[in-house]
Length: 387
Ligand SMILES: [Zn+2]
Image 1 (cartoon, rainbow, N blue to C red):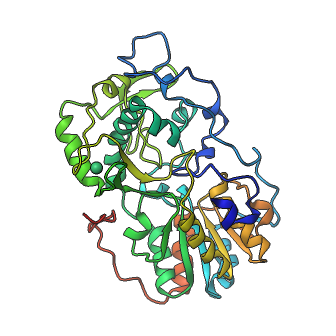
Image 2 (image 1 turned 180 degrees about the vertical axis):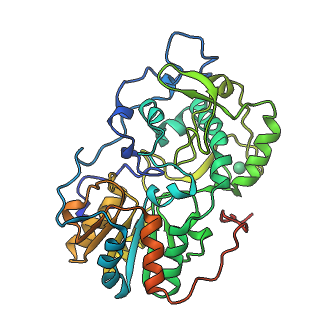
Image 3 (image 1 turned 60 degrees about the horizontal axis):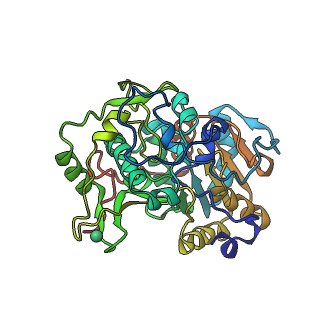
């Protein structure tokens, strides 16, 4: 897929997952599992680590392990960052590429966030395993069901809203996001390409029905009334304990570390239309490819831009990094605002290492004359799928 749309991307880009999976760090790809187990675990009392069946295989790492050497000074002061970005963004036609860092202030932790213990124990499920194995699919949905309540409650933050204001001020060529949380749209942005899909939609692999996740959630709740969604498997021991904090053990792809005993009790439901058990979230799994037309559309946004502005992404996987490569090949400057180093630091014209919640609202205040029309604080934080 990527090759035709993106000749400069090098090796086939197969790492397009719901989020920047390679961010999970080397620990997440360590121990090799046994084969996936039918029926999953029956409790935490066994001798094997409770999470072992969910470790799959190292996902493809298409890029080197260490961040690039910065090509320009790293600005760590938010105000100085705004000053450096102002002229570039004021020229308009800005292509924006966002990653998990944009949503952390909405309570959705990114892969480098504080839930490090989880990251060490867990690698994302691949599409190959999701589709090949009924037990794995049921396991995915159990964990996703536990994580959904946090994602459904997430609301756009000041950074999302500032970006929508910049768009309404006519300064953006478009927004390309690696996030599957729908928060750009909820904040009022319109030209959004959701590279990895959106967790708010559910697809039936058999009849093609597209349904809102909220509808599936209602049926799953009805079928699983005794389930303890707050019981998490934590740490390498697999010990099960109630969750703590606002988003315990939840990942940007909506996966939560639901306790093994609860996964074993989870009851999946079928398609609302045909009854099939092969329901899928409308997201791009690891091991799957981003649909070609989506890549083409996103690449077109970059190609007609005057600036590529990367926000909250370490660009660790090729599905995002290739846009930087394309911009560089066309001589389009790249500006990056991200907390921590990125894979593209050696290609950046401006590097800002400061919180997006500080930088973006200040930038919008300077460049977007009037506030965006409010996108209702409680009205549909999630795009409603048709049907
Ligand atoms: Zn169906």
